Length: 121
Image 1 (tube, rainbow, N blue to C red):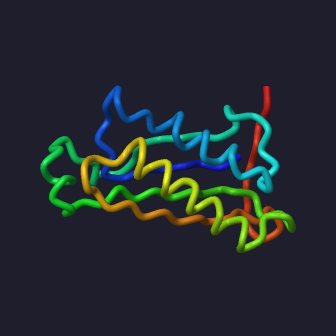
Image 2: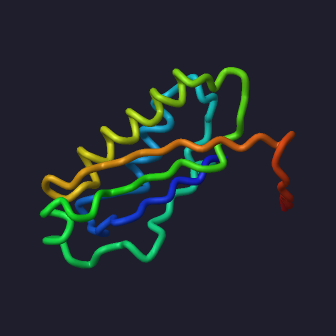
């Protein structure tokens, strides 16, 4: 279950971050994600700007981090690059303000090397 965090995102009804990020992830079929609700999306961090002029001037890029993407053999570097590009293009089209720069980073989670605790139900 990937977690997508966005910094410097200016919330608006015209900029549907959650829907755009889920569509971008689901479009990369090699990820094997079949449920869009398994993709968590949040605007995070103290760098979120309430001033559209700040982002429009290019001072604050929209930074998107895809984290906790489980490391699997089929999720090659090429697939992760494809995901980064899909998310970046979706963000630029649907979420960024005016000429705001967009930066996307992908970080995987290997349950054999990192620790996690999961509780279902």
